[in-house]
Structure formats: C-alpha cells, structure tokens
Image (cartoon, rainbow, N blue to C red; front, side, top):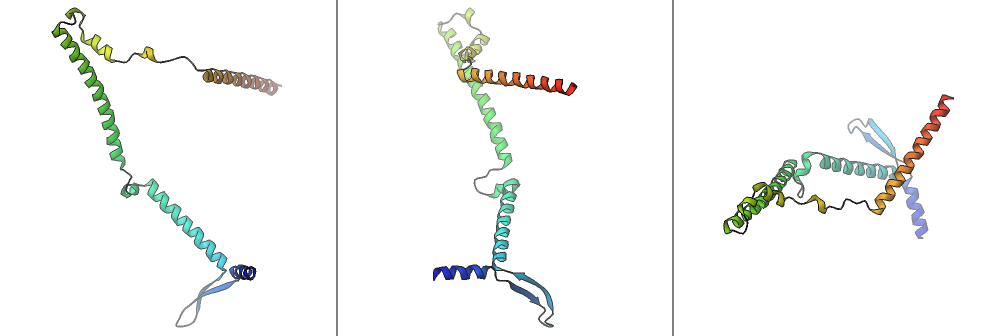
Length: 168
C-alpha cells in the first residue's frame, strides 16, 4: 500500500494544472500558466536559495554588517591597530628608559665608573642581539633548494631544445 501511495504522489507531482487569472467583471482571461507541483516546488526552492545568497552577500560585503552584533566597524579596527602599534613602541621606549635609569642608579651608588657610563651603550644593551637567531638551513630546506635547482635546470634544457627546434 505504501508503494501505491508513493506512485500516486509521484504522479501528482507531474500532473499538469492550469493557473488562470480572470477579470472578475468580464471573466476575461488576463493570463494563464501551465504548472506542475514539481515546477512550483523547484521554482520556490531556487527562489529561496537565491534570496538567501543575495541577502548573505549584501550583509557580508556592505557596511550593513556593522549592525550585526559581533562585527566591528572598519574605523574601530583601524583605531585598534594604530593603538596597538603605538602601545608597542611605548613599551619599547619604557624598557629603554628603565635600563637607562638603572644605569644612572649604578653610577650614583658607585657600582659603575662614570667613564664607562654612556647613554648609547645602555640603549644598545636593551636591543636584542641578532646573534641568537639560528640562521642555519634545516634538512628539509636544503632538500627543497636542491629540488628547485633540478627543476630549473630541466626547464632551461627544455627551453633550449624548443628554441633549437623553432630555428629549424
């Protein structure tokens, strides 16, 4: 019995119906459509998907997204970035001043001779040494360099062969 119901439902989906719009006073036919339930279903489904996509794109790529909770304005993001850069530079300056003050305190306490005390030398101590950075290539990087060199040689050889064949 369920098989029969399924077949009947399938048949109903593809039965052609006519939608007619009439003028009520004169019963004149204004326009008419031949429709099936499947056509109506497909049309509304595609229309809904299109409407969802258009709405999503409008919200995602226009300033309208700023009204959605969780999204911030572009001006706010710019200000936050500017303030982050400024605070980073202020932290660096503060560290340098602290090191300078500690050096002055050493001189005043007599722990450091005045002749060895120089503002530039103290500030140079605050800057991190670049010698601590490991500049040696790893095994994977060396292998990658070799592979790239081989492919470049092959490409050069192919281009030379192609030029010779073009000249002939």
